[in-house]
Image (cartoon, rainbow, N blue to C red; front, side, top):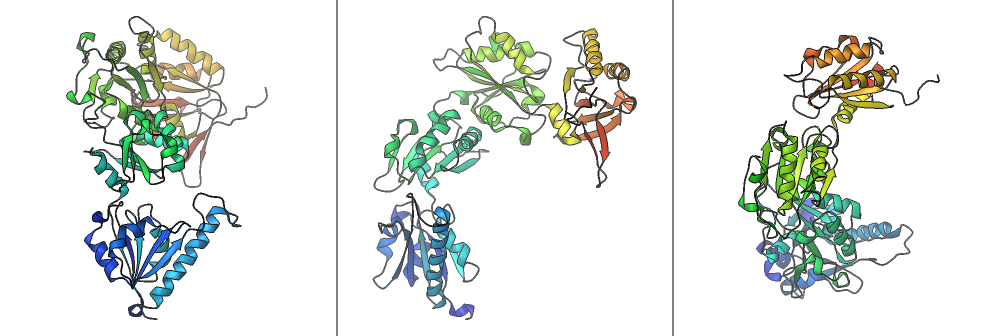
Length: 519
């Protein structure tokens, strides 16, 4: 049978429920179709049909596609998936018979046909065999935002759409990172979604929308909704954070850190807190979902200028940048903001607990007048692990982490620890190896290590891992050149067991066996 003799398949988006929100094209296609198909549960009622009802003709052939199972159990040998697969195959065959007979078939779909719609199962089975057109419709997400009367996304914000059927942990992680979000398919999943919103710190912002644009429409703060009253056709909405009504952070921009008297904001009844956030070694690919969420939720960001510049600018957030050598001032500044009711994120490269800002903040927070200020630490990927992954697995056995900076401890202490770790045959991760003002420490460390390590011990030099200037090199300990090391470099010094192997593709990898030889 030639293509000209077959009928045409249409997936017709009807919009969110109000018949007046159907597009002109949708009405035209329904009016011209020979066959009108729609899905329904066993009770036979179809929301899609009720939306389009005024445009149906008495001579339309109606194909009601009745789901064999919705939320109940099934005795199908293939379980729920098997029952549904068989249903979709049979339904597609019924529509194909009309198309083969030259009839035009319009499959009705609430919202948009290709947005979580049942039509897509017909589309995947028929569109490659028959001429097909999809008529887009207003989605339920757009309708919900319109009925709430608040911006959904603004500027650089990203909208995240989630099915409520996801596991709670997954929902929590995604909601924590989202600028704005819509969680669909509630009904029985509502308790899980509510817990995920609460765990991600987003419950206060969440709105509930039920049957948007329909006669039984309902909107409310999600925290106030009775779980027993929630139908499937409802959603949770996290609107735009910009100018959010619960926050006063929209009145200020960037503010440099001065003395504590510069801390902006007056007294507030809203409890503040300080969250020390690890950014990882480089850009957003190294940022955990938890860290991303805390950065988005903060009223104020505090940090070293270079690290603060790695955090996207969000409208209304205040950013307080400072030099890298004022950790204590930065910590007290952040705690002062929190005492005034601000939610403060102190940013730190790598992991904040590894030679970074967590200690400075906690040290200040254990003294008056900051003892009552809540402080949390959010971990990040640290430089040693990032560099090790790029090189292979040099940290596969016991290892020690030492900073070569003598700004906060005497060199004699560093030298003693280097000797002890080297004598114990530990792999070493050496942080802060050098800078413009510290040029001799790497050379001295090499001399100390050569007292205990063979000259050919592999050393990984990882510079700007994850950044645009990333470079990973493997050298012999005896050949370690201090001139090739700067503050953005981390050194991983192997043990007596660490191996360097050239793989079949010509790349060199470094790894330390997990098994240590018997004495």
